[in-house]
Amino acid sequence: MTLTTVSPASGASFDALAPLRLPAALRLTPEQFELVCAENREAVLELAANGTVIAMTPTGSETSGRNSRLVMRLLLWADQ
Image 1: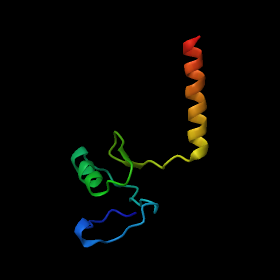
Image 2 (image 1 turned 135 degrees about the vertical axis):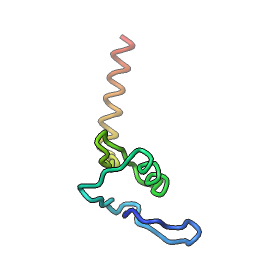
Image 3 (image 1 turned 90 degrees about the vertical axis):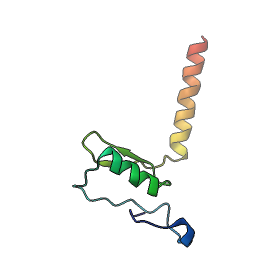
């Protein structure tokens, strides 16, 4: 997905799985980042301390399985 303004009423479609392309030199203030997030609600973004935008990639089923096993082991240990 690219950072463009799309009116929800226009019915324009977008590819939610398309990569977010940002210039390497781009630095945002927290206020600017808030505006970007408001326009790209489907994107999972973080703002680093230096103002760079970090696009968080979704995890797959393999990661979810590992996380589930880790939580299970932690709960078993805590119960003991």
